[in-house]
Amino acid sequence: MAVGTGLRPSEIFGLEVEKIDFRRKVLRVEQQLITSSAKGNVAYLGPPKTPKSFRTIPLSDGVLAALSEHLAALPPALIQIEDRTNPRRPMLRDAGLVFTTSRGTPIKRGTWSGIWRPAADAAGISEEPDCISAGTPSTLVSDCRPGRGRAC
Image (tube, rainbow, N blue to C red):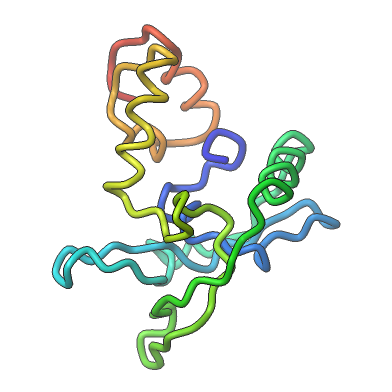
């Protein structure tokens, strides 16, 4: 998802099925998953990082195929989560997150590091998971190659 769309990790972790339009081959970025260290590592949905971060992303056939396969194998269960996308009207609601942990909970930043590190080691990528959020998909492909040995 990161390489194929250029989404930030928090945007990927906050992606709901309803934001994906398979027919038009796009997804809408309207929220992100935020982990609040101030409140005991609680995850909630919030607005994207900046006003320009609200956007529609075109999806390649490869990303669509991978998403379809993922959703067929791991259909999203509804997770009750606090939604603060409108700060004036926070609410608790059900969200159909596309990506969750094996326990069906939101993927928090710390959880992602524990998933990423073994996969990165196996692929020969030596840097931290922040390279996933750096730049465009082409930057990721050129800078996050196995054996590159530097931060993306």
